Image (cartoon, rainbow, N blue to C red; front, side):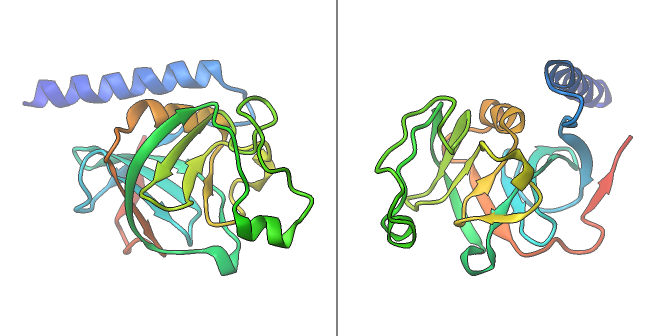
Length: 183
């Protein structure tokens, strides 16, 4: 059992090393953190207060990624699930977005101009997504219409890990001592 855990952690560290070598120096790889909660392995937890997303690895660990959350009037909490995943997603503004900004296009195809970035995870039957962004400076801010933005490198990493049906919990804050940085 102990050897299995060591192999598991070695595989995670190798994956992170490969990600770090493929990324830019200005953007760190996701962090492995101690995660002492009852959330199931493979779950995604978004913490609005900290503007962090956690992907539960199991064995008391998770990957932590920085995210942008909704502007104050668009923030929400609850439980959804990953309904679908899409590479290079196109973007259609919601009717509410178009009312507020009538000049928005009806549709932007996937590719370098799509506001959804390189990947998107569609949450339940809602308009909410976890997606990449054309505005990396918004990461860590309250900047979206309720979706969760990630650096494109991070959303690609998460996309490759998560499965359709994975639970997604959006909470205001974690309980004290649930997360600790590991070395």
